[in-house]
Amino acid sequence: MMTFSKYSRLVAVAIDLFGRDGMDAVGTRVIAEAAGAQMSTITYHFGGKEGLYLACARQIAAEMRERIAPLLELARTACTESGGAAEARAAILAILGGFVGIMMNDDIAPTVRFIVREQMNPTPAFAILFEGGMQPVVEHMDQLLQRIARNRLTHDQVRIHAVALVGQVLAFRFARATLMRATGWETVGLPEIDAVRAIVVAHANAILSDLEKDT
Image (cartoon, rainbow, N blue to C red; front, top):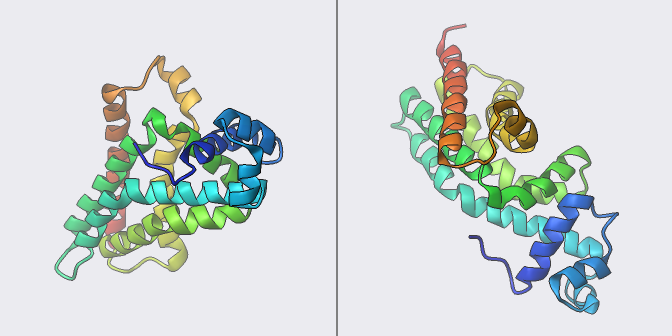
């Protein structure tokens, strides 16, 4: 379980409410009451609702960095000079497999709702989310993909491939209701997570095999 800052309860409640209803629809009084805090606390420590919203984004970015740190370490190891295409492929598959476990976990739902809103209608908070949590993943994927493709990809091509590979994992979180209805699953436990992971890895393997071919 991730730890929040000194005002953990307030930030956690704000992330949940902002993610459910959006910043414009949620008042500071509602947030304070739900968190069991004084409304003046938001003004004093965050400067108001907008400041609290940005603090939520910073907390989410920090939380995501903590969650993905072990996955990025795999990428750093594979990107050493001695690492080849096989090591890069193994690292990408491990990153995606680990990412499935993170994104399919129920405890990340409030965070994802917040991120989805920022994906659809970006505010200044999106820069915090991207630079703090998403950009490191994309950049490490870039290096691994270029190693597999022997540096034949343009900047745009490698970035689109990276977003596509990571995006397929995100889809299983963003489209959670569709997944549950389509499969008939009532809950998501280890068997369901393993099933999703196997498909994601298979898809990624097919893409990476294509990138290894000569153009």
